[in-house]
Length: 74
Image 1 (tube, rainbow, N blue to C red):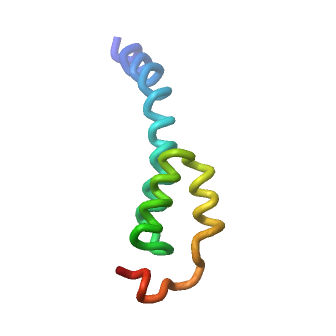
Image 2 (image 1 turned 30 degrees about the vertical axis):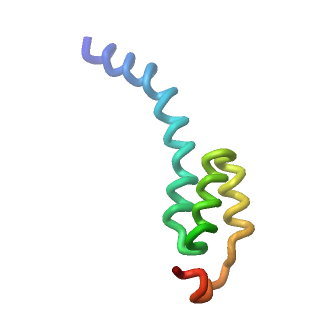
């Protein structure tokens, strides 16, 4: 009985939970990044909410690779 309960739980919840986790990964990666700050980071997060992995790939390619100057560090 316990095995069927575990199997039932995995088959019903895994298809729901796995896509949600995959959708959230780029949001956390952008939010924790030190490459951009302030409004620029907020805009990247909004774009990641709307376009998810495409936005994250664009973020990695387009965000600055060098340290930001003090004007962006507010």
